[in-house]
Length: 434
Image 1 (cartoon, rainbow, N blue to C red):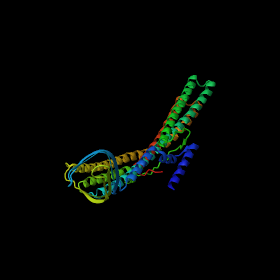
Image 2: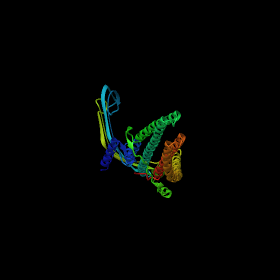
Image 3: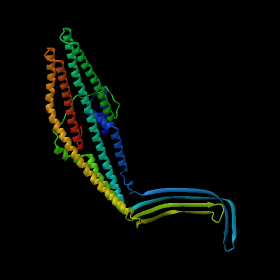
Image 4: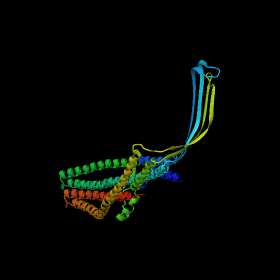
């Protein structure tokens, strides 16, 4: 049922792209289905699941079948001692055959509970692989959303430039009219035309940046770029995140969970190393068959078969203190894993605090930048009207345009920065989802 749902969801997303529109939700869904890094990490999780088996841990019996058949031609020269007196037996080119077959089985009974430790370690490795998969999913979602809104930002730049170009066109029209009636010089006309062409060049350069951003986004989706695809034209920000809530939920971060699981894995490795210092007891059993024939010599046929069973005991006495040093090294690895977890938590706490400060500060700047943006738009319209009435110079129009462009750029940059901070806060807290 789940596979069917994912298939329908992906088909819908592909159909949406074919229609020329792509929302951030659809982009994330496509990345979760097609992203190469997610596929690789998912495959690693499946490998860990396959290896999580009691047989891999060494807890199941091992059965081996063997068979050999040896055909030979030999020269025989035997001297036989008997009551009737010694006699010699000589034969050249005697054909002999040796056939041996058997089934051998061995079962571990005790080895210091090493099998139990290995099985628990395999379970923990599988759990860690799932945590790393969740981490990859969170990182991919964050990367896709950040790149998606970067494309929206670049498109917003184009809209601001397009609006400024419209102002330049109206300015050029006004100057052209004034020029016909002698109220404007050729210098003003040529300068206005140069300004218009320069802004059109900027617009073309911005189109290139936009298409490159789209290509990077589709690369994250593991799909071919489609320049005709349209994106959302707005960035919605969740402005009610609290630092305390994010810090409290930080333990859900899959990287921190994986670091904690690594401690357990290393602790179990210590137990496995310590178990090697205990005796190993195995039960051995099997069935042997042997048959030897010869057309020359004292023995013409020798055949034996039958089952056997026995116990095998191995007791480590001394091996140059290798096991002791291995156990010490395993304990150091456990300590390293604990330090790495503490370092990971501290780094995330620091990043969260810094990112949250950026988030809050940017939200405050956005609220004031909206007002500035509206004022610059009014200023451009007013200056253009005054210019048409010969109450403002061309330099005033250009200055108003620059203020409008800078305000538009700053507003969208602040909005993007706040959204990027929001995404990072949720990713570190392990709560990033659609």
